[in-house]
Every structure is written in structure tokens, then in C-alpha cells.
Length: 127
Figure 1 (cartoon, rainbow, N blue to C red):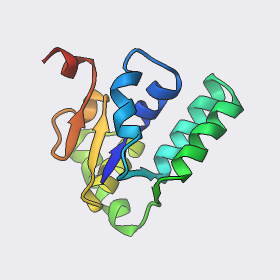
Figure 2: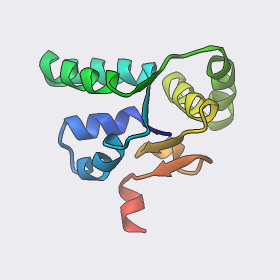
Figure 3: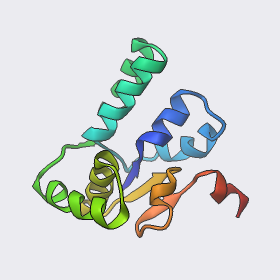
Figure 4: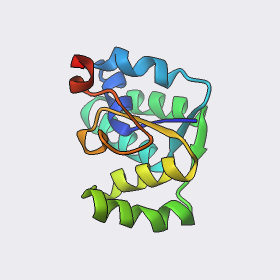
């Protein structure tokens, strides 16, 4: 199972310089989407682009396996936040990926060295 972090969805829908790096992951058959990623992506796309683009992204996300926040990641996320100095949403995404045995794909440097993470940020392209 693959989870693409919010930054990947946003990069893709904004057609950012790293959008092509996320495209294969966003087309994967085993793609899953935590509900907090839906929240972040919808909010930012609606704010920065248009409601139509935000709706398109959420429609695509709903077509995947949606992972609601449940008790296991809710209890594990604070530990990740404290240990890795992560913000709440980042910690929830990380804990959700671990709870489901998923690979977390991200360009967010906060996750770069964590187990179970496939880092695709700009620094990864130079290696």
C-alpha cells in the first residue's frame, strides 16, 4: 500500500516542478488516502487555486482506499510528534502509514530519514 503525503498531491495539482515525480505514485493501484490528507489538500487547493480544482482532487482521492483516523494512529501519532518533532497532521499521516504497513511517499524533509518513507524531495533527485 502507498500513501502520498499532502505535499505530493499539492505539487501535482499545482503542476509544480516536482509534479512528474509524484504522478506514478498517484496512479498506483495500491494508493490509499488518509482523511487528514484529504482535509489538507482540499483546504490548500481551495484557498490557493479554485474550489473546482479542490473538488477534482477530492473526487480522485475518494476513488482510492480512504483511511479514516482511528484509535491506533490517534494514539501513536503523539509519540511520533514528540520523537520526530512533527506537526499534528504530519504525525497522523506517519502513524496512519505505519498502522497500515504502507509506504509513505513525500517530499517533506521532516520525513526524509524515517523508516517506511520513500523520500522524493529535491535533494533525493540529486543523489
